[in-house]
Amino acid sequence: MTRYAMVADLRRCVGCQTCTAACKHANATPPGVQWRRVLDLEFGEYPDVQRVFVPTGCMHCDDPPCADVCPTTATKKRADGIVTIDYDLCIGCAYCIIACPYEARSRTSKPTFAYGAPTESEAKRRDDRKLGVATKCTFCVDRIDAGVAKGQTPGVDPDATPACVNSCIAQALAFGDVDDPDSNVSQLLAENQHFRMHEELGTGPRFYYLWDRAAKDVAPADDRALATVPAHAVEESLP
Amino acid sequence: MTIGTQPSRQRSWDPRAAANFICGGAGAGLIVFTVLSGARDAALTASLLVGAALIGTGLLCVWHELGRPLRALHVFLHPRTSWMTREAFVATLLFPVTAIAAAGVTACAYVAAGLAVAFIVCQAKMLQAARGLPAWREPLAAAVLVVTALVEGGGLWLALAPWTRTGSQTLLATFGGLVLVRLFVWLAYRRAIALASPRATSALTGAGRVLQSAGTLVPLAAIALIAAGAVTGSATLALGAAAGLFAAFAGAYLKHMLVVHAGFTQGPVLSRLPVRGVPHVRPERI
Image (tube, rainbow over all chains, first blue to last red; front, side, top):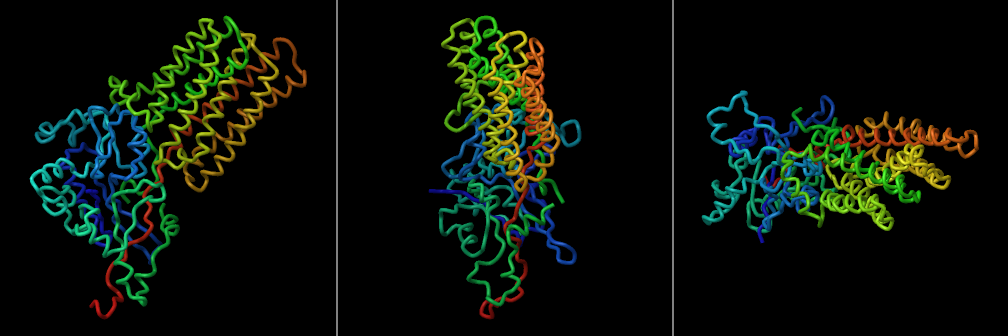
């Protein structure tokens, strides 16, 4: 069984937004719509301040709230874990946008362009099927399917890998099959401590955040590594 | 800070969506109260039709909000898990049954009342199923919507009483009881979301005050005056109507604020911060 997942190494991400730009380029999303965002968060008080860049987007949850509430079955979860939207079924009720705890979905009612009138590229790539319906990150499912059909491995072969992962300058993003113990993402998860956002909601997000080496690799005297910030402290420091 | 770093207010459902909850709840509640009142003939017909018209108005509003309104029939495709689909199915049954009941088939009135309750429950669960918004997913949010819909319906029933002449002391007491229950459920709900969504709590403060004063104290005072026999004749019906309208409008205002202004996301939360660098690694790993 294949279950695709994304891994973001918070220690590596430098917030360059290249993944965001690559996603926009690959998916031709309109202005204001970002399927792959990078949050710029600041924690603590001077002089003890930490800045964290957090790539976010659709988490392709195991139990996606968006799919449960969707009245049309436009939102579906594939066997490989990728959550998709059928633009021809969606009625644009926006219920899924509200149900998503990760603010990963958007709806654009009218064609919008970066500079008012469409550029040549925008005119060429305009897709009216995406107007008035919910849209979100697809893990570049078309690239994955095309790559798999050619015998390629998503997350390893660039042609079968999401655009954001290919573009990451720091190799902070990784993609692959978490059910394969030898995959790149499985190894990253085994070698590092990780968490998933809003796990308490029971959504089972398929987006893992690495924050430190695996506990077995951290020396007992390593105060800095062990001095993890408790969840409530982080939450409280959010504005 | 970039976008999405703080809880933000949902902007996908605007006053048109709120109108569906307000009109739908009030209309369904009115159908319930009308049937419970034992109204007959023209009074039954008028009240049921007003109730159905309100539900229809709410659905029309939300239809107008769809990104692809011409595909609206797709809403029926997911009854297994979607409360929006279930609401649509119940509404589809509710309209003809209510019409038949309004035409004088009394037995259908009870079926209509049952469907109206189901409609209210669907709407309440619809809000609660939105797991992205702490103030909505709180289980007591569903209770607030259910009891508010019944109070609004009862309020409209009282407001129509001068024309329908269907007033009843028992139902008036029931209405008063529901107003009290709504107050307690609201207070419990407010306490429940205070920690989970402080912004929603703040957004609902004004509506809560209105609910407690105009929506609770005024109607209860009016009901007390009626029960004490301080007013007689047509003044009783007028006072009852005023009490009903106050209670209904306070509930509608609360729903509007809940849907349009209190739908805050929880924002991103990191349970750990990244540990950067290698300050004190084990010697064997250097």
